[in-house]
Length: 137
Length: 247
Image (cartoon, rainbow over all chains, first blue to last red; front, side, top):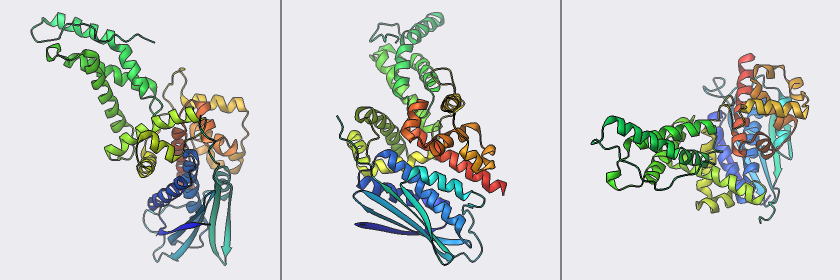
């Protein structure tokens, strides 16, 4: 990948808009269509949410990497640290949300996605290729 | 289409006239310009509000314009009414359309962007890029990205509102579902789907079971792709909340 952005943010849904903003900015740089940008919005959030459900403990922070080249965007999401007092107030709980449903949602939104494990620490990732817009009339 | 009278001569509802004459004049103004109100309301369509609601807002604004109009000020009534109706429609969108308040400048850009996206999609035969939208709106790409993000707070149209063919969006979704003979793969995945409304289930099925694109869903339902995007987000959020409560 030619370029990358790395973000660390509290593991709370009210900070996920930061991921959406950066993903949209990168998608715009490589001329993805608005539809793809909005699919990536949903997918990036789903990626963060699904990571929370895989976490063996209450996560403190998320590290999100957005990497891209002229034809593809890749996002990876992993956990950093543990919260001392359980899930912080306002954190989204993904408990009970079926992993298979998350998978189905990501299937429809991106080209590839998955989970890799480093010991008991999961990393969720996705890749979406740009469909080159056809020239307009 | 109702013809729009332009610059017609009409009596001014000035205080000098007897009440009956003022009332008649007002009624004539309103009747003569209902077509104008409908035309303006249509210009605001495809922005997430039902056409009926917009037509009603425009009609009420027309009545307000007729009440306030004073020909002695030298204004042309259609121009005066147009300003009033457009102002009321913008006010309606600002006050009623946003679940999360966004700055007025961003709200108006979002609405402008919606219209540009609809036009570009028609012209290009595909979803436009952010760069293309920015060029069409004569704004920076950063402005457009900010408007897209702000649009996440835009309230989706009530799916229970009756549309132009007298059917609710929900009924259109359900009609599409029945016609397509959709399988219930998602339902097999999760019994909690039953806790969602039919409208939420339908939108999820179209996107994630049938894997229609947002544009394809938009075309089937007669709504904008950006509106589909908002509905999808809302459905997923609702489903997630249902799970959180159910565990």
